[in-house]
Image (tube, rainbow, N blue to C red; front, side, top):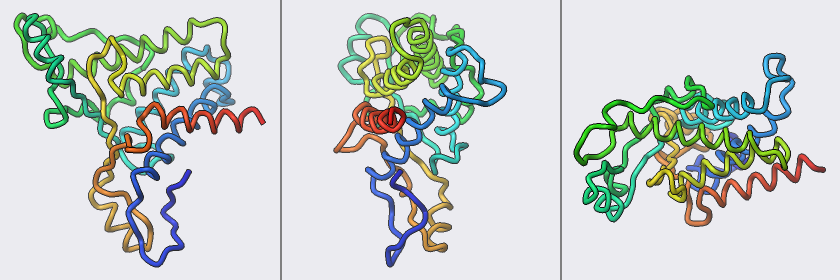
Length: 240
């Protein structure tokens, strides 16, 4: 973990995008063994599927800013390409928001109250005739249901360890966010967004701070690469 509000520097500074990315993915990698090996009385003997759902509960809590392991909430901005939108419009189908400028945040800060292993009924509005942009609610349901697919798919595997199943599930989520899941024709940009008063508070206390917004995808590493790096480090520590 590279970010810390404590600093030995002369003046407080903004964390770099790489530092914020490292903090987020270091925390995400920590959640896998935390849940898989949990000794918590309520989950110790639970089936893996419930623990996978627990990982997602912690992940969603992190995105809502309710986790002690990461200092910001995280916007989840969904957007597709103009080419995909044109293709769907010509076919009379609905489409994802077009480009970064049209991206829609599907994080309503209530994600942590969703049981991640359960599929959600698709809104009736999704069956309306015509071609239009998907609504925020519809896209959130699509995301939930794809994640539920991941949980079921990894839980059903029989030839790998529970730890690898959980790590594989998390990786699939970041693959989806990078726009590389054929069943979710859009990207989900993860953008760390601190409370607007946090910066001033940390500066007053001589602490480093988060900028107003930080994309968790950096020029150095995309989301999948960041996950692979931090999970490799976490896994190496577990096997020592």
